[in-house]
Structures are given as structure tokens and as C-alpha cells.
Length: 572
Image 1 (cartoon, one colour):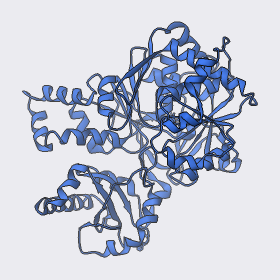
Image 2 (cartoon, rainbow, N blue to C red):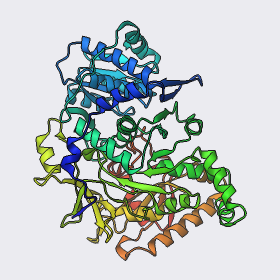
Image 3 (spheres, one colour):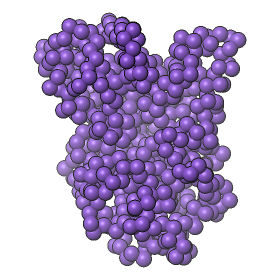
């Protein structure tokens, strides 16, 4: 068992204040400071102070009180990230209720499943791009409210935020919530099946808000940009909880198209991203300069400093002091590439079930392949079958309406069974080696863990996404998609041959590092990207292995027995 730090947990717990109490402090002491920077579709930018935010939250809380729902009612929230997302969350809490965030890219079926399972009384319908598809999942009787950035039809049809703010007086009291009260139900992203409602208390938000802030020395002068779904536990605590307890400014992005400019506007000092975002930044750089030329310039003492500054400034990361990656494994090659730019990416590890408070890498302690050591007050064990077990003070209260599933995930000693396989080195660093359920057995009876193989394949910068599979095949196969730049070369016969040779070299290099039963029979270049929209990825940009298998396994036997080492498919 590994634990970190010797602080007294009981003393720490006794000194906690709720997120709402911290919000009242910001209102009183930082009223004139900028809280949110919100870009709009027309190119204008709104700068909202803590005082103006508090004014709107108090008016919305007054409206929610007027609905006379029973205390602790569930109120849903479905929107892309924006200032009003967090304001709505605070208003729900202030009015005495529980927030139920939904990912803004769900199918109508999943929207309905969550709304019916949670028993939500009302829902904020916010900034959305695919609302027409999701709308069919909203029960007719649900009370609906819209944001200023909601789709036009939602603003016209539902109770409008601006009208409420104009017509309701702000509540004048400072409602308190008990630390152990239920604050939110976060539905999992569904990588393993039907989403489950993870219940978290105000105490859990306080623990993560305070401890993460201390770990990275966050302060009111810091800046963050919020763009990953706030419905995801890691983004929510990294943005909302940390901001309430440290008072920094949060910037938002208007859209994927404006994200590069939004990032440059924010010039964040603290930045959290999933691996695919870090990889996208690298691809953007390679669109301007070749990989070989960049390596040459970074190795030269005469040019390296200027080139690093030019690149980080062009990305909007020139003021970055803490860069964190999580939600999925970061390839070792990508981490090394950022080190050349002077950026240390600190990997973290956590789950919705412990509000992403489990393991973290402190500044100066990053190690290739490791996700850090346990966070303060956290304990970690490796079970007899190699499963990572985590006991965190931010562990969930349980799964909503699912006591049997709760008992399966949370054992009698208070450890969550993560489903991940892992190892702990002599210095207490955790290395995730795969998912227990993702291991598969070939027809030869040998088990294969896909994650380490995928990490090796991801070292090539022409590869965008990878999924190693092969249950009951003679040998594993690697399915992959190409980066936009690499895919554009397929139209040219000569470039296609060069790419094929390059990928065959990647295959040979990868197989040379694997045991015989792990070696890949072929690499299959898929005809299109895996996306959230086609249900091949979760909202947090993790590949859905079950969906990949369900859609393509009818081809696996043919692909596995092909004589081609690299197979380009046009129709799967």
C-alpha cells in the first residue's frame, strides 16, 4: 500500500468550507476582479466580474426557489462550456438543489435515459451545436430554461435566462449547504455500457478544490481556459472547484474553430488537456514546419531558444507554468516532444468515482510512463490480479439508485476497484498498464494487453488514433486513423507508397519490442476518423473499444490473414 504526506486528515476535514461559502468570499473580497471571460459568436467578448456573476446567480437562485421544488431536487444541466454553465450550477446549489450535468454530445436515447433515471425536475438547455438531435430525448413534462448562448429555438421556446435576471430580485441571504449533502450526480461517459450516476458531496468538491490548488500553488493571478466538457469530473474540478477556492480567472472558448484564438487570448498559466489535444497542438506545429527541420532547430544552441519561444507563443502556451494531461494515457513520444519545447506535462490519474482525486505528478517529478504518486490523503493498493485499488477522501457516495453496483465498485475497506491494471515502482509512482476488461485472448490462448502496444504505435506522428484488438484471432491487429496531414497524402500514389513504407517500419519496430504472442499481424488504416459524433469516442475523447469491435469485427479475420503488412481500407 502506498500513501503520501503525513497531514492529519481529521484536522483537515474539520477546517473545510463549502464551495458556496467560498463563492460568497469571492463576491465579498474580489467583487471587481474578472471571474469569467466569455467570447461570443459575433466576435465580441464579455468580461464578467465576481460581483456581476454573483448578482446573476442570486437572481437565478430566486427563480429556482419560486418553483417550490422539494429541497434536494435534481436539476439537469446540458450545455457546452460557458460562463452560464457554472453560474447555473451555483444557482442550483444556492437554491438548495442537486445538479445533474449531461454531456453536450449525447444521443437522444442517452439524454432520455439520464433524465428519467435521475428524475430531474428541470433542465438548463445551454450552448449546444447538435440540439436538434438531442431534443427528442427530452421528456415533454420537463421544465426547461435557456442560456443567452442557447440555440435560437431554445431561447424562443424555453424560459429565458435574461428574462429571469431582469424580473427576479436577487436573494439577499447566503444559503449554506452541509458538507456531506449531495451536491451533484455525474453520469459516467459510458465507455463500459449504460452511464451510471456517480454521487458526490460538497465535501468532495472542497477536498479537491483545496488540495489541487495547494499542489500546484494556484492563486488569484492564474488563468485557465475551459473547453473540455464541464460534465466531466476532471474538467469540473479543474475549473469550477479550483476557481472557487483560489479565485483565478477562467476563460472560455466559443467554438472549435475559434479555439486557437481563444487560447491565445487566455494565455493560460494552468492548462489541463487530454492526450488528443496535446497531439493536435503538435500536428498544428508540423503543419508549419517539418518534423526533421524542427528537430534540427531545437538541437542547435543558436536557434533552440528562439524556436521554443516562437512555437509556445503561437500556441498560446508561452505563459504556461503547469500543464496537466489526464483521462487517457499520454504517449511517451509526445511527452518527450513537449520537453524539447520546455513544457513539462504532468500526468494525472483519477476517476469520476473519486472526483478525479487519486494520483498526480508534481512539478519537476514527471516520469515517462507514470501517472504520478498518490495525492494527499489517498491510499493505493495493487490487488492479487494486478488491479489498481484506490481509497480517496473524495470517493463517491455511491451510484444513484444502484446499491448493488456501488458494492461491486467500493469494497468494505473503502477502496474503489478501478478496473485498471497497474504497477507501483520503488518511489511510489503508479504506471497504468491497461484495463483488466480490455485484455483479450488470441486463438492461441495467450493474453494481450493493448495499451502498451498502442503507446508504441502512437510514437509515429502520422498516426492520429490507435486501437489494438484481436480476441480469438491468430494474432493481434492494429486499427488506426491518420492525422489530417498524413491522410491528405493518400491521393498521391508516390506519397501513399512512402506512407505505407513508413507505417510498415513502425509495425516492424513495434513488433521487435513485443513478445511473440503480442506481435501484430498487420496495421489497418481506417477510412475515416473515430469521433464523438459517430459514437467511436467518448465525450472525453477516449476510444470506445466495444464500439470499434461491434462495427468492424466482421472484417477482423480477413484483415488478420492478409499478406499486407499495412492495409488501407476504403469501406469497413
